[in-house]
Image: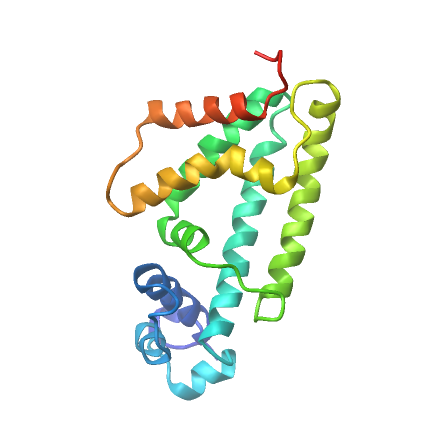
Length: 199
């Protein structure tokens, strides 16, 4: 039975409210009472859908990560050229963060749930599948001498580390990136990940 409020069910309202509260206050500072107040659900309704604040966070984090990764991969596979793919993902990352600031802030600011925590197993499996698909795109470019053979963690740091830092400044209100700066981030990622001799 759907709630009368905006025609959305309790679970959806809790997830949407949690996104607002977690994004604004951080997970640790958010209380169960504030989650219930934000979503407008009763105690009974909350516990019908979720066992704890951590359960809400785990589900929300997993859903956001899944959406981000699906869009990332859709953008990546559109590019057969190594440099075009590297630079396009940096542009995508910044665009996605701008279009989904609350979701991006959560991915950037909060520690992912660990395997034994709610949502942790789903996040771990999603990451494994995601990195397998990124590797499938990467491998031919590496064999052709365009991209370096790098470990997944180092790949992430070199590819999107500077963009993540730019997003932190952006979300803190310290600096709004320009199109030229985003282009520069893409070029820097390419220079970091290309094999020597590649232009």
